[in-house]
Each structure stands twice: as C-alpha cells, then as structure tokens.
Length: 179
Image (tube, rainbow, N blue to C red; front, side):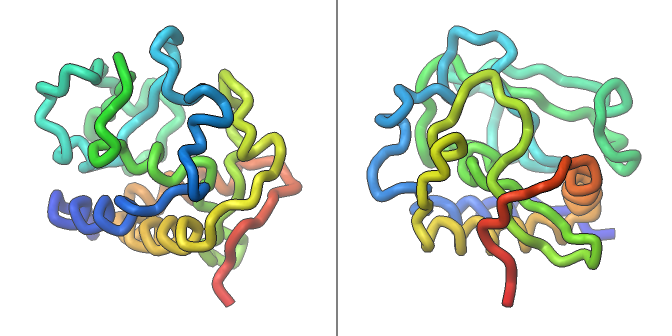
C-alpha cells in the first residue's frame, strides 16, 4: 500500500505553487472570506502525511489532533488527523493542499475515473467562485488535476475521495474530466 512521503508532498506543492483560480487574487472579490480568522470553526483537515510540510512552530496556525474514528473519515485512516486554523494571512507557499485546490474538489465517477467538480460541501461563507460560477484559469484546473492524480495514489486519500464522491448529492458541476 502506497503512502505519500514528504518528498511527494514537496513535488505536489511545487505543481500548485503558481496555480491560481483567477489571474488576479480571488480574495479581492470576497475580502478573503475563506481566510477569515474570526470564525473558530473555519479551518481544514490536512491530508494524511501532509503534516510533514509543517514543523508546528508556525505562528500563523493553530493545530488540533483528532481521532479519525470520531469523524467521518474512511476506515483506512487509522492515525490521528490534524485540523488547522489560520490566525492570520498565511505565507502563500505554505498553504495546505485543500487551500491550493479550492474551489475545485476531486470526484471519482462510478467507473473510478478522477474528475474535478466545483466544491459541493456546505461552507460557512459564500464563495463567489462557486456561487457565481466564475470561470477558472485553465492552467489552474490542469495543475489541480495533476496534483489530485498524484494524491489519490495514496490509498488513504483515494479512500477519502471515493467516500466523498459516493456521498455527494447530484447534480454535480463537472469542471474537468480526462478525455
């Protein structure tokens, strides 16, 4: 069973370093709603192994360790999971995967093909990129697809994407699918 290493994450972060949803900073459209520090519940789970990209001395992050069995994670997630919240704007090069790939989400078809959709999870804010269906940069979409193609090689991440895909209500807004 394959698990991503820190070197794998370094390569995936590199793929996404220059990828942005819009040519300009999308935070200007919504006043950085997804980065607001005044919401204690606003944060995200790191993917398995992604915690190696941080040394836990980051002054801009708050860390929580959770037991995956207490939450809706796949059975293959047996090690603790890390929930992080930002205390202030983060250094762009340190953003976690899910910040880098938002507002896109990986989705597996019934046949097991990886596609990208606009995120469907309920959010504590309204993202204009989702709500207004703003067109995303093609280079961003391709980089996100390349990153998730690598990420799901880790069986734990594959299991998460599969579980999320099975639980999503239809219809989905497909943004990218391989030809």
